[in-house]
Length: 120
Image (cartoon, rainbow, N blue to C red; front, side, top):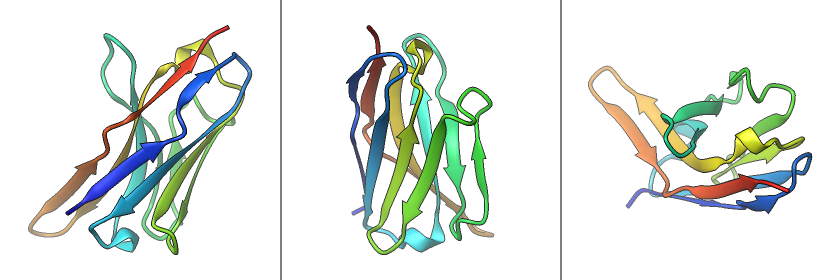
């Protein structure tokens, strides 16, 4: 079955760094755009970063541009989010997402999330 398993979250001081990882299985990884979303308490889930299936398209939320980097390793079926210069407002649950659309169907998979807390 489809699985997306996030890891790498934790508690970090402002200005610190974390690297999130997402291990994908149960689907053809190379066919899917991969994204990281986050949701802070009391707020809606928001798109943080996205990378296309062929890595040609990468986009970021304005709030993380220049600080976060998304990447994928198709040999290992992994997607990563390198987060630098972390701020308290980056505190949230971070979710990995796999998405693909065809003419007849939409495929949309989510992981369980990993908590990131930025605090001194």
